Structures are given as C-alpha cells and as structure tokens.
Image (cartoon, rainbow, N blue to C red; front, side, top):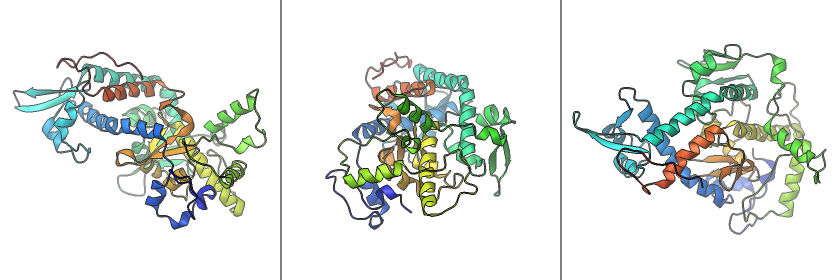
Length: 390
C-alpha cells in the first residue's frame, strides 16, 4: 500500500518530469528516483566515517583490562570487513591521529590503539551530557512506549536505537531498573527475549503532546500568519529539496493531505473504523508516528532499518522506507555509506540542527575531529586543541 501523495506520480530528480504510476517502479528505482538534497548528502558524507570511528571507539572503551583502554590492532583487523574498513584497520586508524593513538607494546609484541586525550574528553562530555539529561531520557522512553499499541516494545528493538535516543550505555540499570513505577521487563514469547512494558496510569498517557503540535502553535501565533487556523490543526511543516519541481497536481494533493484528520501518535486506535477515510487516516497516523519518532532522537535522524523494528509495535502496515520517500517535504532519505538514513527535514538548516542539545554538541565535536583527518596532527602524546566549529 503506497501513500496517496506519491502513488500516482514521481518527480524525477533531474528533469522534474512525472513518471507514470508508482506501482510500476521497483523499490530500487523508487529510491533512485528521489530528488537529492545536496546539503543532506554532504552531511551524510561526513557521517559515513564518523560511524566507523564510533564503532571502533566503543570497542576500545569496552575493554576494561587496560588503563587507558586499548585494543589490539590484530583484533580490530579481524573485524575490518564487518566495520567496512576497506583498506584495513591500521590504515583507517592512521587517517585520524586526533582520535586514535597507535602504539607498540614491546611486552606483548603487538601494535595497539587507544583514544587520544581529546577523544576521551569528548566521550566523557557526551556521557556527562546524557547523565545530566536523564529526566529527558526517561521521558523519551516513556513516549516511545506510549506510541506502541500494546504499550510495550521488545528490548532488542530499544537496543537498536539506544544511541539515537541518547540513552546511557547501561540504560537497563540506570533508567529501566531505577524507574520501576514506569518500566517493567517481562519474558518474551521467544527464548532469551525480553519485553519492555510501560507501567503508567491511562490518564497520564493522554498528557503527551506530539512535537508537531508545538510547530502548529508557533505558526498560529505569528503576527503575519496567513494560514487558516482550522486547516493547520492537521498539518505538518513541509520544505522540499532544492530544484525539486512541484506540479499543480502534486501541490493540490499535498494540500488535500494536510487537511486530512488522523489519530495522533499517542492516541489509541481502539474503536477506530476502517472505512475509506479511516484507512487514509491510518496512513497519516503512520507518518505522524515516524515524525514523532525522529523528533525524539538526539540528532533527528535514524537508520531506516532500525526504525523498521518498531513497525509492528506501532501498528504500521506500510513499508517504512516507502513512507519516507512518499513524503519528501517532511523527510529526507540518504543512501550514503551503504545504509538508508532518514532525516527530519524541519530540524536542520545548513547541515546542522536548528535547536541543538548538549549530547548533539558533544557528538558534533567528534565529527569535527573526523573532518580534520590528518590536518594539524600533533605529537604521539595524542594531545591536540579542539577544532573550531564550522
């Protein structure tokens, strides 16, 4: 089932022409036909290597046998294919002397790597930022569970997005176990699986307000507001990739969709009739859930594969990837780095979050070190000055 906006037309990224009917295209063609946004593509180009750096950083910090923590290059080399280190682990580490310090252990007769002082400090800043915002972390997890039809989610799905949600790496103990009045872990239907359940009064679940509601209030309160306040009650903010041509038919369908009532991401679906308009409303609710999910993430971005693990919990019967592609005014999907990553368009301006948070700021510092590469590399001590923000 494809959404009404893009079911009958696609805008070609180059010529902007209409391409037949959506159902005649394959999934790969649908992805390839999307209009590119150079700002998000450039940002994802930067993130490709950052994600590899973070993976290695986590492996180093997970080794408690050394002080400071270190990792054998030989061990890392065995993971090169999994980590997509095309030219090998040693070559990749040498590209980032501001982050990794390579040394030789004469006792073990093996080369090792560890984080530089500045990289360890950034990791510490991120951990402190997460600890300082634990109340927000708890709220995010409660909201995530509140969007679930059963108010429960497989714990393995949460593990997929713990970093995106800004959860501490020990969130099972520091968040779940310390808030038994909110969360409960139970055994799943399969061996060695656990279900995270929301333990909260029904009336409190209804207090949550979706992120889009804040935008609607701001729009309505503007002095120069020209939007009909009765129309905006079901609307979402839209902005399109540069150069994407919008036909009159497309604009008309967007306007029609904006007016379409729907059940909000925190409202129960119980008792909702599935008539023709109801089905369309359910589709719009899926968009609302995806919008809210991205709004809950620290960087307003997530891999499509990761959010797909929540599809059944949220009662979404649509293909998540196609859902993002069907709404280029709200979401942008990049295929850089051999992964599909979706961004919330309205949260970004010129490749940065419009409303940054402390955890994002700490992670941005690590990205800045990645962008430095070998430039301004200092001594083997691993000390260096923090790069200026772009």
